Image 1 (cartoon, one colour):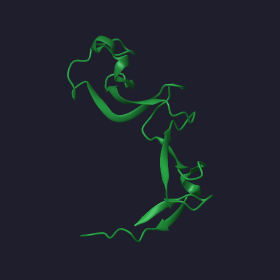
Image 2 (cartoon, rainbow, N blue to C red; image 1 turned 180 degrees about the horizontal axis):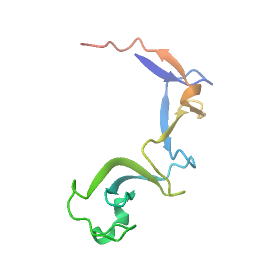
Image 3 (cartoon, helix red, strand yellow; image 1 turned 30 degrees about the vertical axis):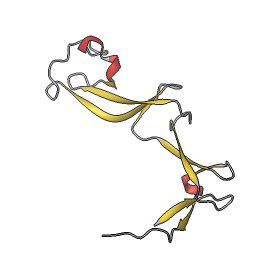
Image 4 (cartoon, rainbow, N blue to C red; image 1 turned 90 degrees about the vertical axis):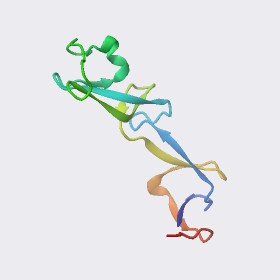
Length: 116
């Protein structure tokens, strides 16, 4: 088993910092998107007020027939961007420095054994 290791102080006591990939702010919410097949609109579910498409104004009738829901997306409260994957950096709990995944070092952990 490998652990993320701080490139500054060599500690394995690290945490994740998730953020918007566009503006790097950590102010986001998980969002369900709706795709309206007829006009191709894909927007957060909250924009489909009264089950009407915000683009073409037609009423959505049946899930799977004229529209679908797309789960596990995020909306940034700072810049408004919608994205499927969060940006992730690491924070060292020992020296308090922040570093991206590509700067992390990896250290083998002898304390755990994989059981199959």
